[in-house]
Image (cartoon, rainbow, N blue to C red; front, side, top):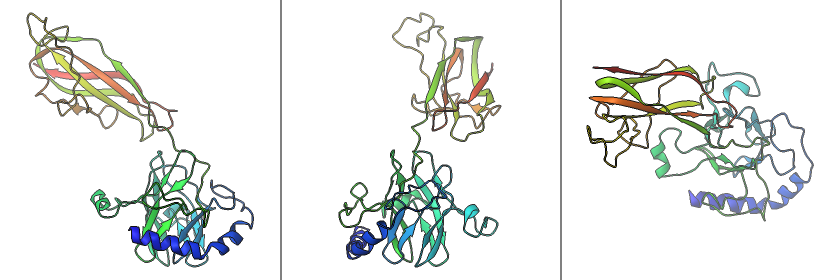
Amino acid sequence: MEARKRRSMRALALLYCFTVLLFLGGGVALAGNMSNQPSEHWAWNDAAGWIDFTNVTATPPVLQGYGTSSAVGDVAMDCATTSIGNICATNNFKVANDGYGNLSGWAWNDAIGWISFWCGNIAPADCQSSNYQVTIDGAGDFHGWAWNDSVGWLSFNCDHSGDGGTNQCGMSSYKLKTTYVPGLPAQSGVLTSSIFDAGDPVALNFVLWKGTLNGLASTAVRFRIASSNCVNGKTNPPACNDAGDWQYLGPNGSTTDYYVPSGPNAPSAIDTRDHNNVRYYRYRIFMDSDVFGNTTPEVTDVIINWSP
């Protein structure tokens, strides 16, 4: 991959004079949310040349619109917003944005075919032989390379010093820059329940919550469960005076994983290897916001089912 990148950079050096003329021509009225600065809505490929992504919107969950190239034509970012309209019924594809600026999936061009934005589109293991991905940083700048089997690498920024290449901006200054800025990691609200007494030793079967995720895939409700035969969480009944304390565990018996019901009213089975023949129990609930921190799940009730 590095040899291909070096060839791309040599080609860019040969085209330096053309680049200067191109970028001094002034801005273009935007239909997407790319920058209108002359050098901030272009990608480069050795065979296709300059690709203008003025008409692209980079807001998650899917990039919309299409780039244009005088050599190969339109580069569609999703099937619903091509230059000829919605073609998803016959050709379903998209370039996805996970909200943190990590792009994946496929763009399409009639002349050269599929353009991959992440090495793991087919299988993450493929990244071991050729590790690449197009990303958007906190300033809205695109970075990295996309791959096409016919024409090779598409470069989205002249500075590849952070993704296995070098900074060639002194020869030809270009990049894609969007007004969209990736969100911060989701924020979690955490609540620890009071102690519940089953009266006698029981087996904990499942945890279930009622409420709503508020319609966003990035919100989540997660649990860890703790149980004991001591009301104070100790591990040496009936004395209950050792150094132990409540251990909040996930399904693998670990303090680092979670029970994650698929949604409200969906039970998540509790591993009875950790919670069998116990009298006292409690839970810790984690409520994750969307990637922008604007929306959180609403939980109205939590049910832990048990049996004697």
